[in-house]
Length: 270
Image 1: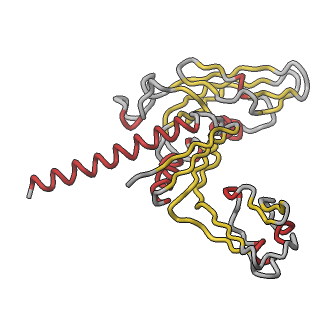
Image 2 (image 1 turned 90 degrees about the vertical axis):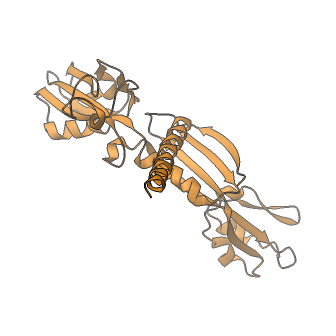
């Protein structure tokens, strides 16, 4: 099977590729693996020594747990650690936070979490709490590797979408250039240029078929090509979208290898 991949590139944290000549289920396997099986660090335990602000300890811990983290390349998953998952320097990294508000309405941001190991925050501008003058927070957060299958805080993407390639066909003999389809399209991908109705950006089509319903002459039809698909990933900061795809491919490769070994062992046993 020959697959052609076109990289559309980055737009901020968003990364898009188009795969042609392959069943979309293959691309969807990458999407699902990124969401569920790629390991990234996140805070799993928070020990609060002092909190004189108005937020409960549990709320602060919950907010810190959802802050995206980077690094952790030297960590092992707790399930593979010699400590049995109890927590040790091989499977956990520590971040500390100690702050006293110098004024009222003082916002404590994620950048105040100081790393004591290989894990650090991916975004310094996430609010954790608002303190009034003299109020304090002191805590120690323990981060470990995990995957989205365990909890959403280990899910490394804020968006992961696979869509078919839209097909928009225009019957020029029926088209009266009434522009009703142009006005009805929510994505504004249709335009009249000269004496022709043109599709400006076919991949922006959402297959809503508003244009089909608006056309008085039935001159436009919308369908999709199941052989071509687009994968869009939006990273939350732990890994770049490219790194997420590489990691997902490695996870799938390991799973396929496990199946191959199991089949070979079963064949030898028989």
